[in-house]
Length: 257
Image 1 (cartoon, rainbow, N blue to C red):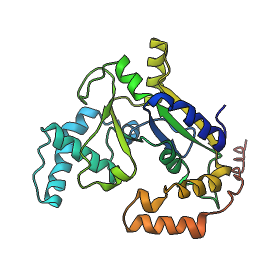
Image 2: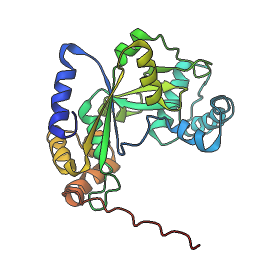
Image 3: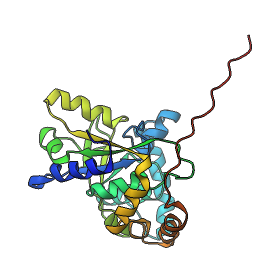
Image 4: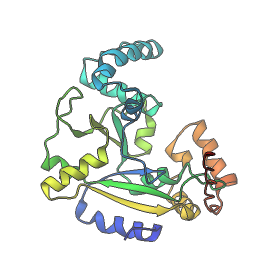
């Protein structure tokens, strides 16, 4: 059972024996789905992926081209992929989902934004996706207009995006809203397991972040800019604390009869 930092490290050591390749993703709350930012907004707005590709992306690329002072040909797969990756890393919704090749960088992202003074969750989750096994079992297209559901490895150019290199970042592209559910269901069809998950207690945040810092994994190395320096110093001087117990919300009183 993977329920603490020590068992997680042992699990990783056993999993990567023999050179197996996995994608890892850390999420701050265990109840969160594996879901791209586009699909999160799509659930709220009802926007279709085709509407996004045909109406939104041309408009966005117009302004990005002006900012970069160079034309972006979104009919070119390489330029289109680079545009999506840049939008993804600057907060604009895309049908991409970020992963990392490092299980320890994934742990950093799972714990990074937990406020030790006032935590709003008791556990974080780190997902491990058997990408090679998946790709050899299902030949998934890399076409966001494809009618069939897919999850595919997607590696855009890292030019002008140093964070991708520092974070050992990899990406999947998908037209599936709930990726975790999809991967589990396809696994049952093939009698295989493609998605593994570890749930770690928030109470171990200080231990985890201090160990990761000794490995050279911190905000200064993951975000090589001024924001990363500030975030790293904040962690050192203000957030390197034992996590306070989660305070449950008071019950909502019943409506008067």
